[in-house]
Image (cartoon, rainbow over all chains, first blue to last red; front, side):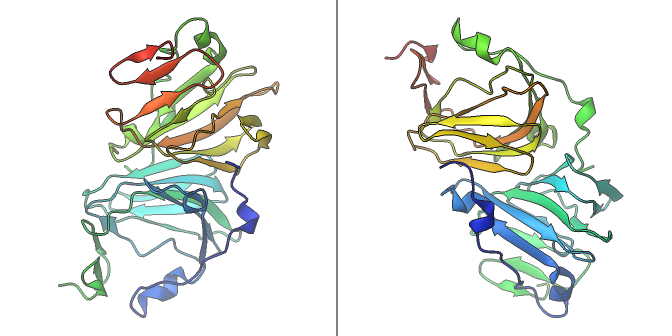
Length: 146
Length: 146
């Protein structure tokens, strides 16, 4: 059955971020919708941000394209160029290697729901966090900046 | 600016299908949202089906994962297992190599809007159309079944 039975999927929470950086994403939960259908060429998570929740720390990937499709609620996209509201139907793209840290914040009193799509090339990727003393690569995991 | 300026993107229409198979997709239009952001690792089109329009002929890809995120309106997902309605927020996945022909039909009186995400591996891919005498590969283009 190609239609994803969203309600049947496990709801994931948590973060591998170093403390205290994980606190900001405590209001984030997600269902792995692409993996549920057996897809391997890209990932897609259906993400809900509770009021106050962040999608991640502001970050950019060296090797992985990312895209967000907003489904409901309102999120604030924060990136080097400033802040932009995302409403249902809005789409944002984050090209691999562009050093423009980005994330979504839910500053509203209602949940914000979006689909985050991205490739998964952990052996090639590094993740940079411009605002905090954190870095990720497959060989180091989450660590202080090298 | 990571947010895609959807209204500024060209609206594409048309089809390379053989006649008369292209008639069914005459009500389909799309904007290339991932390419607009410079993404290369997967494609994403924001597709509108006018009433009566089909997303494609029923097909499956040998080498390319696909996913649909429904944004507004109602579409009928047709696949080997039958017909399923897709409403806003619904997601469907189509794993590369699964020989389950699929497409969306808009049988409603209002537009149906979705995002179609997929990889693009034309050198490896073949596209099979179980209902009609048509086939696609990069070396043959659209042709009668070999």
